[in-house]
Length: 301
Image 1 (tube, rainbow, N blue to C red):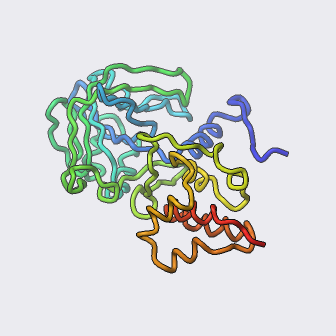
Image 2 (spheres, helix red, strand yellow):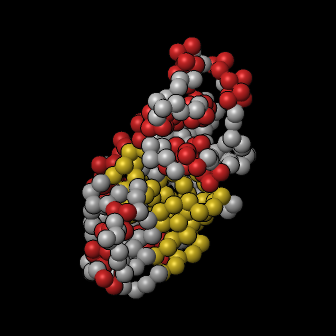
């Protein structure tokens, strides 16, 4: 019996398939889109079908999909067809409840800035206003709209070129880069769930850009077939340029080891389980050379 439920799109009603899509493809960043119509009516609405797709030219795409329940379109889509401009404001945790309130389906002409209590500020390159409370704002020109269908749930890809970007100084570190803990962004998940991209939820993974890792396939069989080493640990072990030797690890790494750590990684383990579980603990703390040193020690039963 398979561990998976498998579906063709035709197997489920659109709302059910839609719900599974949103639950599985998450978390998704939120485009808090400010638009304006030809009568000067401002609209503000969040969309989680959104991401960045290039830097030269800087390109963002979001999609106000057709409503699943009645196949109607949203004011945001109507506005960008009238005036091809939008400001995409990012959403931090401190504004998530107000953002959610703005998603209420108010009548056309109702100003969600006022309804949700946000502060509009003038843009420099486009007509729609920015959201003062947003930590990052992107003034965009709409270059293309691609309709993926005409039925309820179909997407409308709004392709935007960034004309000016605004970053609140309060979210920058000393090097002028965005600190994920300071910008404190939220993302959309399935149902009523959101994710907060800060604190313990944020972690770093070393990118293998300047070097080529040996790969999991090149690890010794007893390591890559281990029942006790996680996939994440195998990935870390495989992200070295070459398999280290005991002598190399001790010559380079041991200068930072405490005597207790030296004794631990040199220990003779009674069995492979104890050895691999010890290595797993080091790898989880990103102490990869310690994990390698443990794994290179012969097991003595």
